Length: 342
Image (cartoon, rainbow, N blue to C red):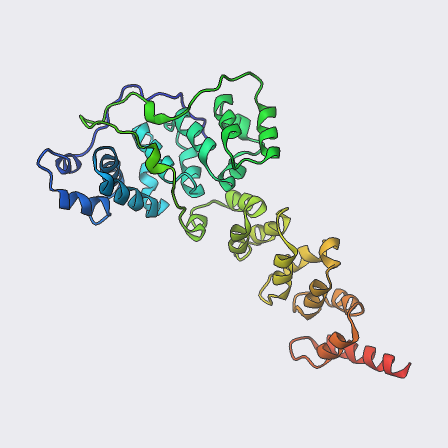
C-alpha cells in the first residue's frame, strides 16, 4: 500500500474538459445542470466527477444535494478510473473521500493512490465509522501513515479505548493539536469559488456491502471476515472460497446465535462445520450440538458422541427424522431400546 503525500495542493489548478466547462459557463442551462447533478448525463469517469464537484462548489443547495447523492450512489467500478488516477487533482480525490467517507471499498482504493494528501486522510480518520477504523488500524498502520494522520484517530468518537491506546502507542512524538480540514486548502478551480463543503459531507450513506465485497481482493476479504461486523460476516461466510468463509468463524465478535445458524444451515461447508467442532465453548451450547447431529457434514463419530448428550425427547424425534443418515437413526433406536429395558 502507498503512503500518503504531503498535505498541500501545490497551487495546481483543476483542468476540466470543454464539455464540463460549457456546463458552468455564465449562460449555463440550470435545468441541464440539475440533470447532470442527478446523474442523468452522458458524462462518465472524471468528467462526471468533475461536474459533480463543481455543482457542489458553485451550485445552490439543490445542486449540491443532488450531486452528493449521485456520487454517493455510484459504484466503485464506475469511479475506479478516477480514484486510482495518479494525475487526478488531489481536491477531487478529497471530494470523493469526504462524500464516501464510510464506504470502505472507496477508501481501500484511495489508499493505493499516492496523490491523496495527508489532509484528506486526517479528515477521514477523524470522522469515519468504526468499520473503516478497524480495517486500517492494524499492524501496518504505522508504516502506512505518518504520526499526524494516526493522531486523527484519537479525535474520532467512534474509536474504542483499545483502538486509541493502540494508536497512541505508535506515536513517538508529541503532535500539536490542529484542525486537519481540507476545506481551508488554498487552490483554484478554474475561476469557480470553492465554498465550504464540510457541512454537506458530514452525513453520508454507504453503498451496499454486497457491492463493496465484489471489489475486494482475497486478503482484504479475509481481513473483513475476521474484523467485520455482523453484516460483513453474513456476506463473507457464503463466499465460495473456503479460506474466506472459514475466516468468519475466527472473528472475535461472532455470536453464538450466528454459530447456531451456521450449524443448522445444511448448506454450510465441511470447513465451517470443522471450525465449529474445534471450538469447545460453542459445543457447550445444547442447540449447537443438536444441530451438528442433524448436519450432513458432521463426521459420524462426532455426531454419535453428541447424540449421547441429547435428551430423550430429541433422540426420539431424530429417530423418526428423514433428514439424518441411517447410522444416526439406528443409534437413536439402540439408545431408546436400551433405556426402555431399564
